[in-house]
Image (tube, rainbow, N blue to C red):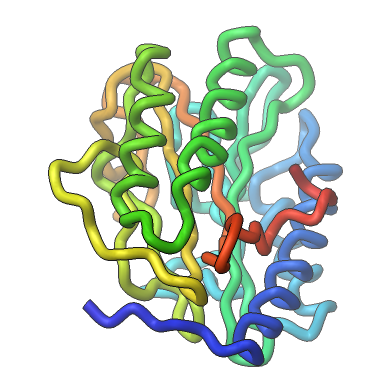
Length: 254
């Protein structure tokens, strides 16, 4: 496993990449409403990314046909946007996207409510978000990678939710997916030793029901096997000599 340690120059480029992506997400959040199609969200996202002078890193990645993954309700991740898929009052929608700035990738995801949503859906989104913050409490030099995984699991499991096991977080830098893989569920091993300069995309994917997922016939869209709602929360982070730095969070899109 080759885990890259970023130089000061690389870290600054990744900060800039992440800030631009956060700007895009702030605009996408404002666009989410009943009546908008998932394809409209994708078109807006790609337009905003390119207006920043960047490239959408999801577009054509291993054949994925869009710039923004738009996953609704029981869709966990990698939902393909369509003109005919219209968001409805009470839906929840997960947006997952990234961009390339001067050769460096950023990646983030958020789940938003569409109009008024149920209290159960609000709780799922809140727990998923908080699980990320519980995980990164362990993202410090001297700790091990799976300390992050175990902290996420310890927070989520008492709520009775299913933690998706088929999909995990990852390293990020000059490639969208770099070593190491970052599971969101408890591990028996400790994993690699964390070092300052590592950059990771940590992304809990949490189902209201069971953890089991399946792939639709498009070979991209992942859905909960039991039809329950799913939420997703992701940021690109930097391991520092002290507390971790959340590169994709400066207050514009929490």
